[in-house]
Length: 72
Image (cartoon, rainbow, N blue to C red; front, side):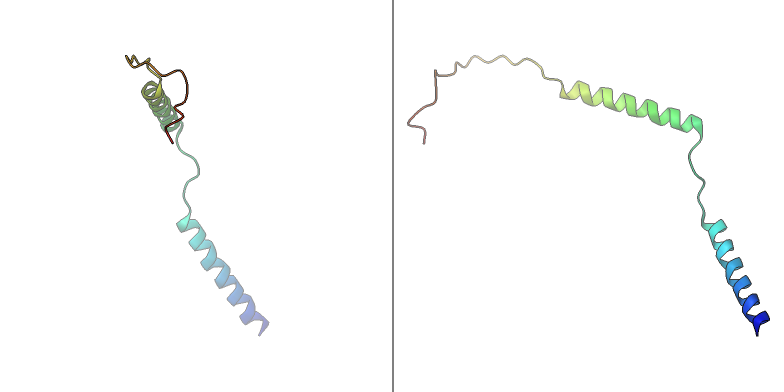
């Protein structure tokens, strides 16, 4: 009976190990890919910052001296 339990535990462990090796993904990425990704992020940040920079606006409208008491 003990031999049967040992064989069953051994088989279950081997099945779990085979799944863990077949389903595993490699950790990390190659160094060249990381450099390309970093360059892409830097270019995207520069592009976004150029879009969001405030540009001076010229208006010909003059604002009144204070709030309008009749507005509300």
